[in-house]
Image (tube, rainbow over all chains, first blue to last red; front, side, top):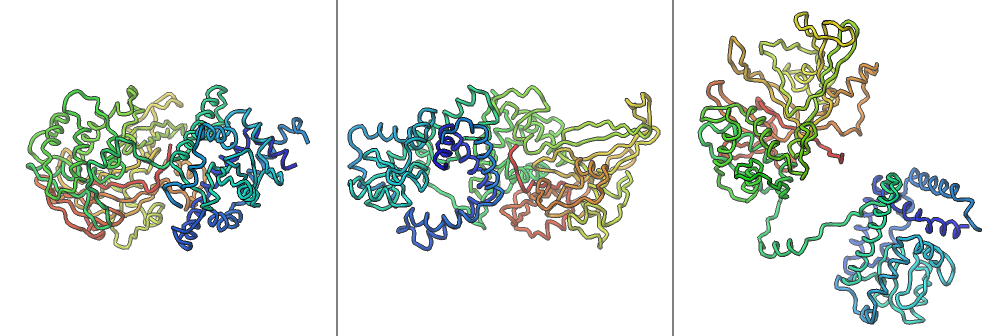
Length: 93
Length: 521
């Protein structure tokens, strides 16, 4: 199910639009700045010369996921549902 | 994380690698057409586990997609010795030997170009199908940090001197020589050169002069800013500025003492006229000028005339550059308002000393005024002349609000200076004086809930022009704010450090406030 949904979203360009919407919402609510600050802390801890992208991903992913406001989640879900409802007859399972 | 890229890419950079890389970006990372999107949707799944999430990467040496999070791509890299992969979400290049994402200049360049093409594609599509909302709320121009152009790099190399702005540096402060009673001009120049938005406009060279002769005042202002921020500590001699002012504002010419407020208005007017074509568009409509002066200083004053008989309201909105406030002690009666009324609590002023405050003056300015039987207005509702009340409120606040305390009385009987002390705050909230506030009051919402998140009407003091002496002979000085809370007194050629107390205790003639929060239109 997930794969089919993802395929539909990608094909119709909706995935990219949703990504941009999410980006805007997360910047607006300050999530981006919070994450930026956390990244800086991690870099300080590990040292600028030795830190890798992987280190950062491992450190900030759980926090990032937890800090997304419910309102943003709701809105994204709503958009996805609306999109699927519109294109339901075209979906092949 | 070496900025010079990693040595392992050299194995990849052979044959037609650039084109191959571009294809990968176009097809699998930033797919712009329906065809590529379809392909991406179908083929971008992990060859090991079939998942499409988990940070999918594509091998750069062969056609292989795999998850990063589950280390599937790592297995592929190890077994096939293909040590480069690309992240399909963000386009970053991962080197398995360096065990980190690498930033190769050439590859970064290709990535940037392909990404730009995608955004451009969306914009073109938007124009074709004309569905404004879908795309305006979707993809927009991506923010990218400033990078110097070749020309800028050249200029920076040829001019190696750098100036460091510390918290106690005096950049931007410079005295002005008095050329014979020209302190009325000097004090305004000090206020203007320390208006943050104006300073930013001129220092970033935004004025493109369209005037043929050498008499553009905006160009001269630009020069002035260069002089002030040059770092020179000797006082500047503004003879060219004075000459231009005399040329364009004849009523101010001559060596006798002039009014600083009149000079401010004349200067803004000339700058506005010379600025008119700055946007490249001919501003035919005087009400819709978009020059920097209008953007910073112009506000809208709403005047409501209410017929006392039919209660019909006739509204006009006029542009303004300053607000002239009557003071107690002038021949026009100043009605004392009870302390604690709206406005004073908001602006944290105390009435214990009994001193008149700026908000008192503003409340008087915006109170309804009965026009009297000798000044009947023709009412369009009643179709006859009726008595009416008139009320002024702020419709649109300017970014820089200038308050002019009317200290010079030139009535038929007498000419004098009103020296009543008026206390003014460092931070001012203009909400009670807005047209919108008045409307909610009229709609029955008497107790206006102060919205702590509404920052639109909050202002900070940044310059105070004072006049010492009498009407016949006097002297103007200016207090200006530099950095967050450093104040300096500008007395012609002499600049001295001042305390906030000095500023707030001063008499005050022209008060300049700057909006605390700016928003895009």
